[in-house]
Length: 277
Image 1 (cartoon, rainbow, N blue to C red):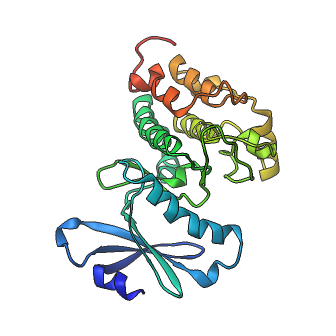
Image 2: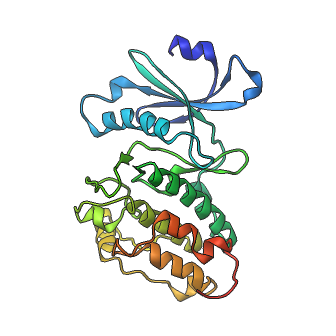
Image 3: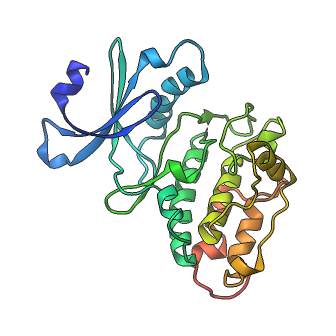
């Protein structure tokens, strides 16, 4: 590992493996009261040339530095680089990610509202700073030791100027917005579609658009035929379903922005049933 990294941090046990490197738990060598961090060590030899992976390697630290501090976004504390590795020292999120949680149970509305409020606050911050995440999914929604949501993995993120459109097919089946799959240029509201899918899954336990294969799933997303099966959604409030409809709106001009989601009654009421929308 880079000598500067080893001088400043005590590297502890391995906590994760990825395609391009390893994640370790670490602590500050100079300040024992600063707590623990995660260091993502990426092997450059596994990421070569002008590939998408190579671009992601360079994109994530730049994006995190640009976004600065936000309580619901993983913070980049330090960056070290040598001939063979890139080391990113970040917030430690060693609790279960949202994917692990939703495989165990369905969330009630107040729990779902707490998750969505934190997620959309993170997205609002990103969008105000001209950053679209472009890969919102439960695996990228982490929690720290205080159970505070931390949005992570900005390798697919893109920066944009106000009113500027983006292009390129990025994202994950089930969560990717229909305009992305259709090959059209798009704006930051692709994140709001993906967040709407997350909300649906929190309350239902399964995605709103799916098929037996990736191709069938993409076809279902492109059709965007949103349904609320009575057996599952009987006890879900009209306000929650209204918010889902407004986030999973195929017409991008009518799809809610992050700021509009934060002002929706279901969010402001914390998921409590205080009357229909």
